[in-house]
Image (cartoon, rainbow, N blue to C red; front, side, top):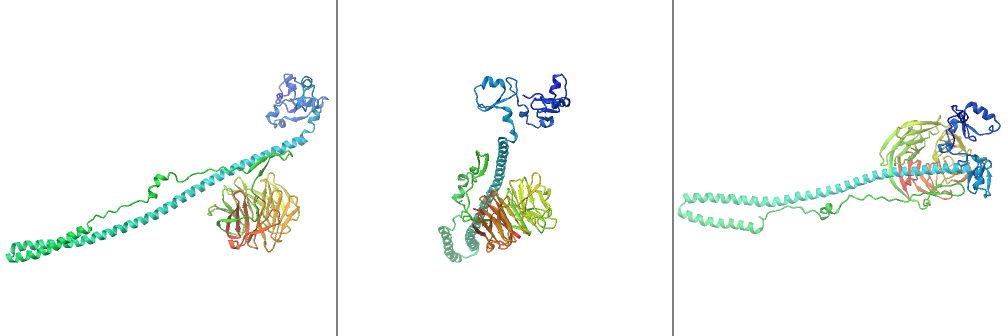
Length: 565
């Protein structure tokens, strides 16, 4: 174990406490300024490797505590045994390794270790493992976001189902209530009609009763006899009237009742749940392979390749952007859509349901992409002094970084989350490393004098448009052309461009009012959208690979969101 590096080891032996300023790895002790002067001049130690204590403190704690001499014999390591893969002191060799054949001088083994292939392989593997862990973290974060979005959608679907059921039940309720009113009115009419006739007969009986009392008191015997005979005949008719009413059943009591439909009656009994929440654990498409060629642990996707001949598009939503000169569009992980308005100098955010969310007016706005962590990147186009790329926080809606690239900047794409590639009018394709803002270029003169060019990437290739030449071109990162697509009868004034997981290239034709997909080798093409679907001078396009969604924006007013299968 290393000695106390905070105090000078030489002075400590002399019972003097002085703070060390230099660490000698060969002596395994710290040295003060005075002792370091002697140490650097002494013949036995002048070639020792030393670092400042401040630099030494930067080492990981386990490295600082690592012993550089044999713990058993308290002697320096001088030999390395390849058979046992361990360093040894001289006494270790005598006691345990005297029969080992492949013994090397430790100085020969460690010489140039920092620049060796083995150490470089460790650095590469660490970087790759870190990259894989970050991708796994991002994959899990996206899964969390998608679960939240799915929960929100399911809640909306449940409410929609409930509303639909309630609306239907309300219609049935109104129908049965109207039937109830009609039934009551019919039965009331029958009863009222009979009641009217009975009341008329009742008045006639009362009139007879009054006449009979007067006859009995004032009429002669003969008059009484004759009147009685006549009244007997009338009474017989009234008795017949009563009997006819009884026999006809018109005195039956009308009863109104309600018999519920069986299916409704059994809802409370048979239906125990409004629905079932189902969790499907689909196999993750991320695989990690460790290869022996030191391109180890590459994380690759395992998609099912799509042929451009088998692609089908289904319109999910028409979006009213209410914007003028839309030049860029993108889809965020939460489904929100964002559009740039070049003339109006603003960015518009549209919710996934098509409603407007907010606007950001922060200067010239041409192309747009989502960088992650609620950050969008916006280029500024080809206006005079359009030399800034803005980084905007969506939550605060403030520009967090105004990057001066010294040239116009139109279409752009993000490579591996760290390198931004953008198009310029006079300088071709340019790059900027977002970690340190260092700038570079790809090839020379690739874009010619194209005013508005867009760019995308797939694997180790860059694909870009040239609206002046009506071309879509693919090159590598050294600028070497791989293929070029030019069919003016199919595609004119190509602008927005994007790729799917298989490298199929989607590009809008502003002059041809369409969207054309080109195979990843540039040999085949197919028109998949045209003015028939409502395209009118489309300028912006974005393919969101996570959900296989294609967003196409007209120059004005409308955009279209498609599901690609």
